[in-house]
Image 1: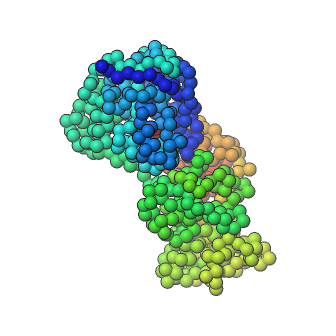
Image 2: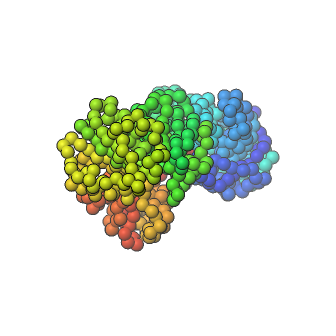
Image 3: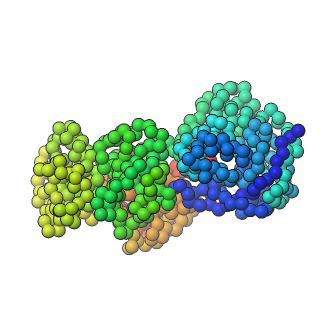
Length: 539
């Protein structure tokens, strides 16, 4: 006898910004739904490729939640019916007794099992368990998607019944086995690549194995992205008024990637923002330290960390990147203002480790009380503190450029520009700088950007960066710092640009711009995309 069950709940929802990504996973129960060939009529998908005819409806066996709670007891309040974003909540139909190609009657609709769900990192965030997506994949508790063969109406309490089984040999569990575990079985791979009812997404995996003789690395999908870390806030310290230090550690207790002084990490915040912060302590294999100033004109990053972030929160964090590294030379002059002091704490330690000399010139509001005063006490004699009562004479400090000396500065754009102007007679290779804030947007004008390859026109308002506007229209360009200091997001352009980055050379600015900070000078601008792509949303 074929499996059958009763629909305990029907669930649908809207796309929301949760745990730093757009997702439709957070659904609510409804009494009845109209089913079309692309799914429930009012069930939104985060991306065009998350859904469609072969991902029209998701079912998950509600009996799985008990075993998941046993594995992850701290998340029992989240591991409840509907938690996996399923449309059909029912018990007893599972990956072991459902087959690809099964024809299922649900209300007046007729469905067909198309493919297993491929779990991804969003499950880790949803349930606050960094290994959950891997566990679900390894144990085969993934759920599965239906395509719709006949449109109709489904009500909560309706029966679910397999009425035809053309491929009894291909259970969903069996597909999962060859998808993730027994990946080198060539004969089975050939059969699955040709299995008619198997969804094109999964069938394509098997075909690519035949074409390329290669096996996929699913690590990036399960962790969120290659090169990122799942980290927990283990402590929050009031460093100074308006400045908090956040101490982060890996949730899997692994050794943290090493970094050199001047490095930063990028945090994906739960409010959807991505922000880079300098690492303010020399490398430790167990903790990363950042310090965040609560800016009065915050664009949302520092406000979130100061007002909403809590000890125990899990964040997705990029591996350290360094666009402000030290040169190996005889002497270093560090010039900091306010929170711009953060990269210089590890820089001092690195200079001493290499037997190099240094001097730190630190501009603050009050020379008696300032951030990192305790850490800097031990370097007395090489640290000089200034305020408006005793201002730093930057021109005098940098009047002479001695051989083997480098100058480094970090602070507001205005402060950094003052230092750069005072060092204009220095060789470019000996002047290093990093802005910790972008230009005020209050004077920015709206403009329209045209994508050269497609002709698509995208409006960019005064409060939105070009990079954000592209993302809002589902055009994703790789980025890192998002403050104009790394150049990773650069694109070619035609038109006139207000360049606000700190990385492109004069010649590069004639053809390239950084959309994270730079803008059009006029009403319109044309850009060419560097292999921009829509990243699959597996969950």
